[in-house]
Length: 127
Image (tube, rainbow, N blue to C red; front, side):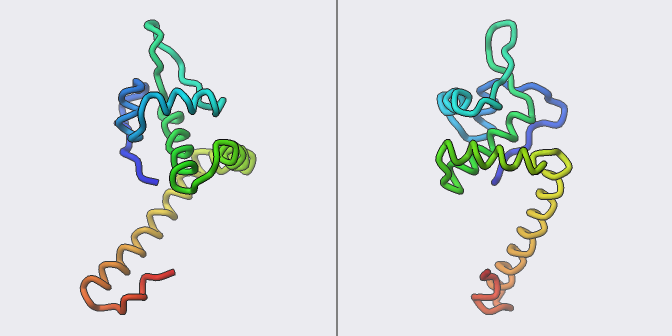
């Protein structure tokens, strides 16, 4: 689940910025807001949506579940509720998961590199 990291100093993001960060169209974000009650960005004085980093993380999770894992909207709602109940959406749990994911990706990349360099048989990186 790849995502360009938001700028560390920026707290609030416009819908346009969120679209760039998540590679989604504004109408998709607005539709998801109607389907996932936890996606409820605040609005500024002009009435424009302003998203916080936490909401962007949830948008990326929804995107991953719908587009990569092929969940239905209802299935994604249930999965996110399951994550919430189990504590997997807490920051420390997300950090631990991210650290493990990076370790797994490094191992896979090393296996691919070994194959490309000819020092490992082609099925060495297979799971």
